[in-house]
Length: 241
Image (cartoon, rainbow, N blue to C red; front, side, top):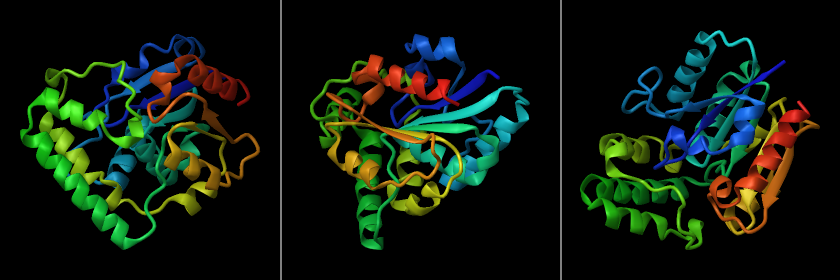
């Protein structure tokens, strides 16, 4: 049976980010999901609420194909919540640079403060300077993003809401529930993205078809830094389902 691949972009991402991956489009029915689609997004709706609304939307599509959920970074965190909300509607998942959550309340509080500061910047700072500061974060290892971001493509209000409402500081630690899922998961990280490699190495995914892929020469933005390796991992995983 054919596969419907629902792809969730990251923060400062767009549905069009997935359009360059020709092999994914050949192998699947690709649904590039806008995170802020009013069909399942409203301002202030938390990670769990978004996931439940998204799953209801997906069910309502009455798609006859097997559903696979793919998410990158923020999209991976939203995808994890969707999997935990309604595991049975998904055949498999592909999670790229996903964060399972922080350990302590102190860490969560610190992250909320950091995201509040970013939110203030996204409210007021000039766009080009804002992008320079965002892309200078350690996770990106100084690698210039291939995908250009124009201010006209975004709602600052929605970006601020994402930073505040979907902050990692508002997320429970999902390690144990994610390890308990009974479906194949491909977990992808870039070799240079050290904290996320450590997260991947700590995971004990139980399904026999699950796999962890560490992509050499890539940092956080694996799909766009090493597109051929990324597609190869994903297509090989999908062919085994």
